[in-house]
Length: 176
Image 1 (cartoon, one colour):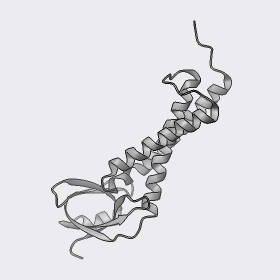
Image 2 (image 1 turned 90 degrees about the vertical axis):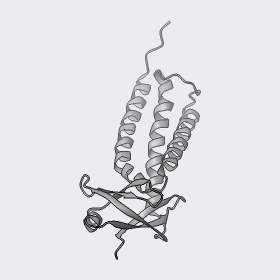
Image 3 (image 1 turned 180 degrees about the vertical axis):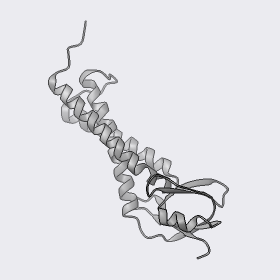
Image 4 (image 1 turned 120 degrees about the horizontal axis):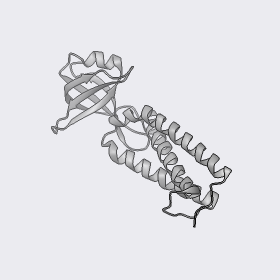
């Protein structure tokens, strides 16, 4: 027995969700480099994505009456697409809120500059050897990169993010 052909509404919703998924992916690519500056950012990213995905799946299932299932065909695909869109939107939103509304830097760390890399446009990166021996890469602006290019040590200003996740908000040469 074959499944019924998808309705016109299902096709339209599928197209809208795919377009929203593409747009959310582009926005994540724009916001993604800022995750480098979050201290231990992987739990922040994965937690936000997981929470958003679960909320998106539940919201779609309850709103449109689609029973939760592991099928990915027909109208059963729509809650999964909505979950991915909501996961990406939540991830981007919490990152933006955490860094934009962060408190001013209140702690500092010193690190040895390994390399200053030119990025795309105004996005540069600095790789720093931390006191514990681990290397971290941080997103910096072009003026900061120019100030750090010939330096050996950097002072990292640690700020408390609006959502409680610490981030490196300030970079300056250690000699100043």
